[in-house]
Length: 83
Image (cartoon, rainbow, N blue to C red):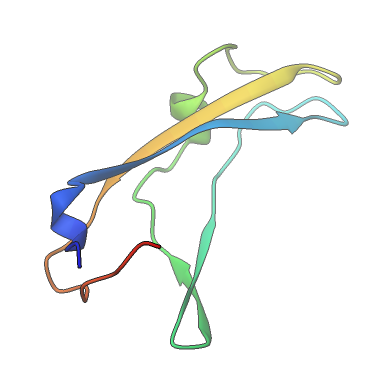
């Protein structure tokens, strides 16, 4: 069993998004599932442009965008096992 605090941080990297139009401001959302319940997880990031690592805002159609977000995992989460 590994406690989530062992990892300290989760990095959502190499997530690629393809745009269909011009975007000046963007916002990220994360939806988590715990005990069969879907919840929106607060990111505390008002502008997702801050997480773009291979381009700059504003974004235009057909740009390949790579987004990265790092978050801390609290100790209150239960242990998880990996198989």
